[in-house]
Length: 317
Ligand SMILES: NC(=O)c1ccc[n+]([C@@H]2O[C@H](COP(=O)([O-])OP(=O)(O)OC[C@H]3O[C@@H](n4cnc5c(N)ncnc54)[C@H](OP(=O)(O)O)[C@@H]3O)[C@@H](O)[C@H]2O)c1
Image (tube, rainbow, N blue to C red; front, side):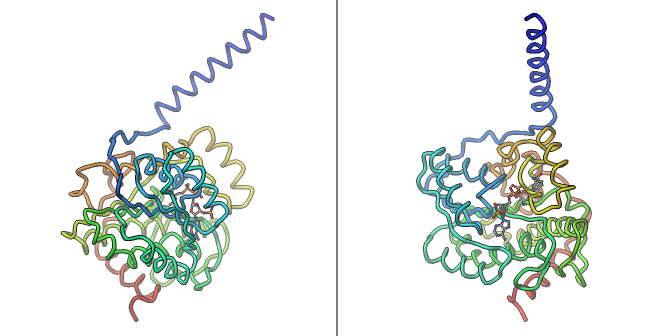
């Protein structure tokens, strides 16, 4: 009896210590503003799981009309019904979008512009780490994470401008520091997990450069742009990785990474915090502006990537 009491006491102590460790070193800063989004329309890619779903839930609680765009109807609709239930907001809607297909991005944009009169906040959140070729013949990771979002943002930009002051948030990652943009091969399909991870880093650098170039080109229009690092977050992000990566990672991340709600805080902050307009084009980590890696500040590279992306998605010859 006495020893089971001691075990319970030790478990309680361990749990208490872990909670303290989580709050101090893992959780990160919270977005504390109470900005209401009543009357605003938000479009969020990849909102059926992880950080995207947690972001959609918060924005729905603030009263926004939230369009959750993702490729799997069953998962998307089930996420939407959970978000509606938890937020008490029925204006949460699923729309089908596969960022790995330029045809799907165009069809989505057309349907969105027909059915939605407003777009106040666009959050480009979806991403994969995956080897192989997209239906357009590009590296699938680079296409989903950068090219698909590049085309989507372009096609919706007039509507976003009509709703200014409006915002675009692009979820990047701190691993953009490991990325490079080699115009000979950055878009070409790769094989093997390590190469797919390098493609992911390249695409996350492309996200940072995309935000920088958008902020420059649209300065003075009332639309502002933010790149986000959500922190190290416990999600299903490595589900297309081999088992030797996935299982050890899952155990490690469950203990040492923040949960999806805590990981959503910087996206929510950039979408809702008043007074960020003068920081358009910046990179945010832990709900504050942060420095990017050196390539993330290279304006010539940002312009060249813009022109290169325009050609790849068929916006220029
Ligand atoms: N987790 C981290 O530690 C971490 C760290 C830094 C940055 N990030 C960034 O945070 C963002 C969210 O990632 P997460 O961790 O929440 O991962 P996640 O749970 O895997 O969420 C990714 C979302 O993207 C969607 N998606 C994937 N391919 C798509 C496609 N072709 N078309 C449309 N949607 C697609 C997924 O839908 P399906 O369910 O259909 O696949 C899912 O909803 C990503 O931009 C990621 O790079 C995450």
